[in-house]
Length: 79
Image 1 (tube, rainbow, N blue to C red):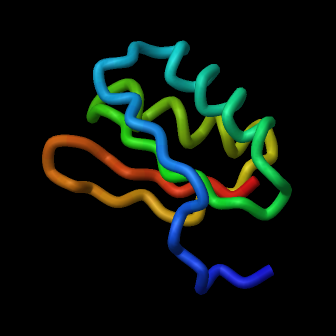
Image 2: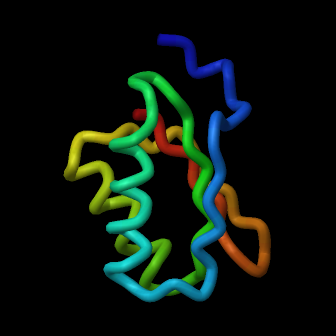
Image 3: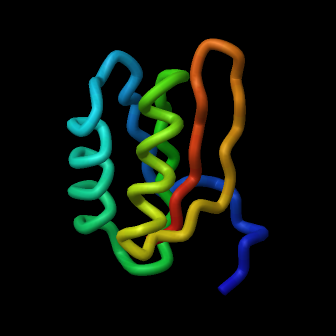
């Protein structure tokens, strides 16, 4: 699997969405996507960025990048 393809297949803006709802929505989206697809998720600082990537990794998803964009974080998750 190549990690050079960093253009996401889908994107979700979950800014303003509290934990654990942001994790649940991300997981449901990933379950709908084809294996190997890349999802970009926008998360708030604080609890969301601290909790969601770890929870996804524990579920077996690969976190490809976490990008600090000042007001929010963009994570890329591989199905």
